Picture 1 (cartoon, helix red, strand yellow):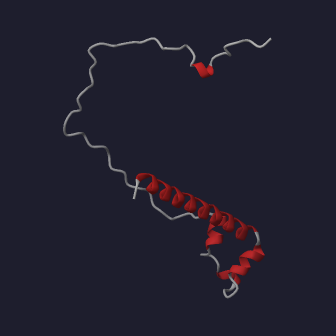
Picture 2: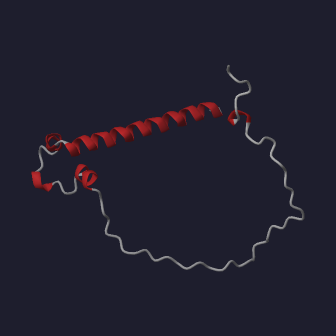
Picture 3: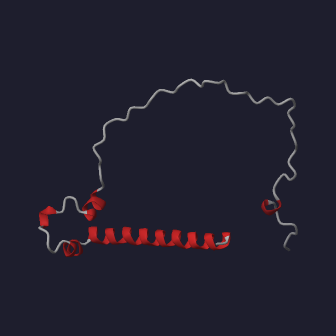
Length: 110
């Protein structure tokens, strides 16, 4: 498979994934906003038993009960890092004060 063909296949897969993700978010938004559409999803379930429903979790947000994370203190490096030393500092004036595409027009309009 050539590099261009692999790029095209991966680009199509990325676009397909992005489109399906956008469609999922749109569908969850519609089901969260419309009680009738949400009830249509739960035809066989009881009305009060949808606490773990993806639409309810999407509409209300999910708060995971996590405790505080234990962060390890930084360790000292075993070998000292070599400092970058320049023997001479070379300062060069810029080629243009303003780049050509950002400067004033070349000719004035009369």
